[in-house]
Image (tube, rainbow over all chains, first blue to last red):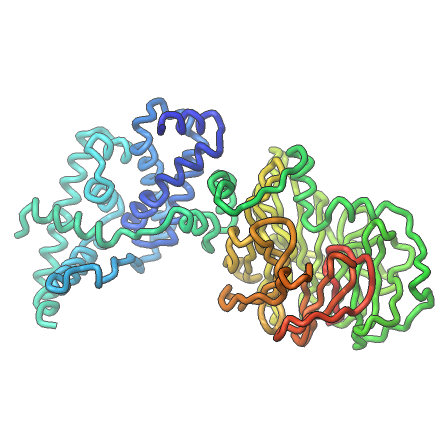
Length: 185
Length: 381
């Protein structure tokens, strides 16, 4: 089915492309939002990625790689949008409603989410991107490499550095006493 | 020290919690019409229009060949019949008093335009329908006319369709506004009289069709582009907010084969260019007019071309309510606020009469005129 849609879209069939967009747009948007931490910028990035997809779809040789290829376009768009908005720091992450969480787990999860969010915010966008692609988009390391337009080895090392940066940020947060304050609140 | 596996779990769990979940259809609309960069949004509109078109309930209008349809639609409310009408010879109307009326500044008048089949022409009558007479003698079947705020001048599309002019009520003192590339229409005079907003349909050197909403300074004739949309989005009918800081306008999604798949209403801040969609494409809303009590507009029932409901809503898109429902037997179109917001003028389609609508009750009262086109009747400001 996906092959037919891709083939149709490559031949200029807007309905086929529309069906592809319909299937992927929510996931692309969520990925962009996690990378950019801003819903409006994420919308811009998704739009830019989809326009690029329509323009360049004929160059996609293997329909099975559509997902990784779309993520590549999205990551590029995120980098571009982030570069254009470096001064816009205010994070805007939509959190899942608390009532969906078990009550007993609520405090710890909310608190942990806050810690992780602060750590993610301290990362450069390239590191956030590799973490989002790996731990949210659930791409294989090979597809992460495609999405990042880098060799597999580079993708692995970037993931490693990003994870290290996260760990360091969390440790630094703990040293500043955020955790103790949060737990006693 | 956090172990790597634990850290990975925390990151994954955080992403799962923090990832926004939005419906694709809602996301389409947001990505397509978000307020950030109106110039970039339409390109995606062109791409994703197909799934919207297949949405249940959306009805398409089969249309002529692509180019013809696009050109017709690009001129927005300047429909084919109006263009044809501008070339018809003017015919005397025995039912209309031919004597010249002294239209004094400050007097209330209603302006309306007749269909091409009825000979075209721009007419004025008092709010009770009396003293109906033709304006702009000798200038032909002018269209899209709008009053200056002081009621002493008119802005209108010239009969040859080449651009917008302003003149006295008798056609004297005409000034042609700049319209590089042609395709200008639908002038709307700002409340402070300094500026006229208008639409322009253009096809660039690469063959890309676009519509613009621009403003022109009446004193200097400097033109400033406010919004640009690529086909298949057609912008139409800018109307000023009462404070003159923003415009409301229509945006139609029309495929190049003439199928219309949605129409929306948006507002734009004139200074910042910030755009906000206040009625989505799926609502098939259009022809907004912004008055002291909100925005009045048409909504096509189930996306069909007729009949239309008239709606009222707040400028931010909230509080929408039906003003006139075709189920009650009325087919009313092209609403316009009276200056004080005490009534809404519109055109009754079956008769071509101008009617007044009570915004509180929806009660309709016939005013007068006949063969009114589907261009707005305009009360003096």
